[in-house]
Image 1 (cartoon, rainbow, N blue to C red):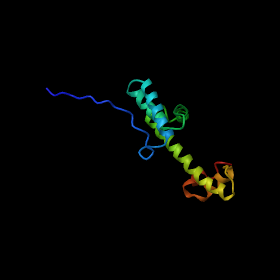
Image 2: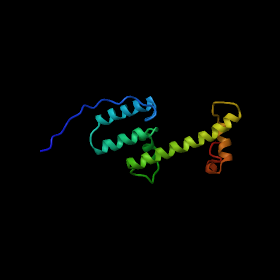
Image 3: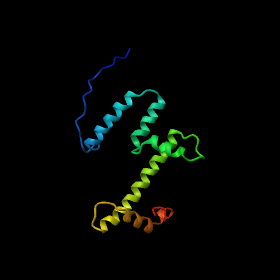
Image 4: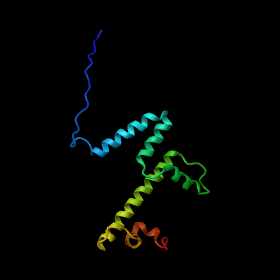
Length: 131
């Protein structure tokens, strides 16, 4: 029979070079705690999506269901739409920020968004929608 030797495990010291910031480690701890409160695979998948999305998934789902062609929306599809929306908003905000900085401002204004929409071909589908 093989004998097993148990060795005590001590928490590793915080090494900023090995992992993210202190805020990230606190966020990971909070995620672990919230993950412990839920049970089942569906709850785990839902919790994972909620943590990765900054937009409220329930509101995204409600907006999706306002389309008469959408009767059901899976959690995965709601998450993907939320993530795509976040990336879109981030991209247009960064482009608009360039115009705000050219005007020596730190606050985005509507004219900055208009300038970004007019200047960047990817946003051509938005022309005339903010009138």
